[in-house]
Amino acid sequence: MTHRFAELTTAQAAALLAGPRTPVLLLPVGAIEPHGPHAPLETDPIISAGMCARAAERLAGSPDVRVLILPPLPYGVTEFGVGFAGAVGIGADTLHALVVEICSTLASQGFRNVVIVNNHFEPGQVATLRRAVDTLAARGVRTGYLDLVRRSVASRLTEEFRSGSCHAGRYETSLVLADRPDLVDTTAMSALPALSVDMPAAMAAGHASFTALGMDRAYCGAPAEATAEEGHATFATLTALLLDVIHDQVS
Image (cartoon, rainbow, N blue to C red; front, side, top):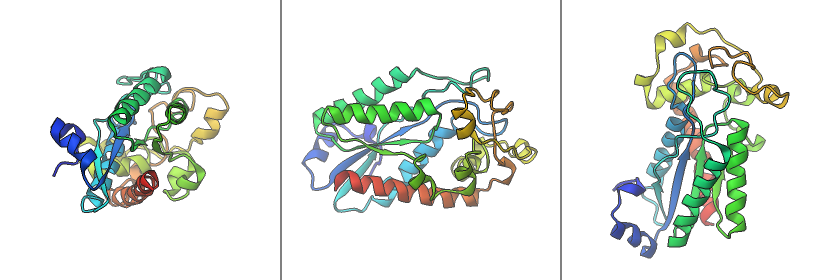
């Protein structure tokens, strides 16, 4: 049984709406941007996809809910990575339009339970996704959104994540090591000194690029301390958070 929505035939998609289980579609969102000299550009989409896969597997035997994963939106609002090779950003209005149109189209067919799963926390990205959820609500489409930067949610994550000094650091690198260890340059990772940057405070002060934040190698935190074990533990927490949103969506 596939967990990927786009692998269904049109007949199978239609059958979801007539079946006894409520379909919930997960939309993984991220960005393609630099994550230090050690982690892949697609770090954020990898984490979002990993969460979705685990949630779908956890609920595979549910008699009430059928969770399927939509094709991801790997591109996001990525202004802080300017000047670094490989940063590929789209505008806020483009992302907003994509999310709103995808969810509206699905809702018009009867797939009214979509949950957005984002792991790119640049202010423009977060604000745009919140705006998209509000736009959809105004159109009568209730869309779930796991907002990991909300204080009540972030409090359940690791110390480095809560510190705000966590771009391509121990937190994110551990998650990639848990899912795609082949994409982490562990030699480069092990040689990186810890770098403390309070990203939320610096962003609020008007600094608008990794370079302006003092992150001249596009990372902060402590990537050398990353482990796959921590990544698996963090994925377990992230999955539990996502399951909460899924259950709220259908309640």
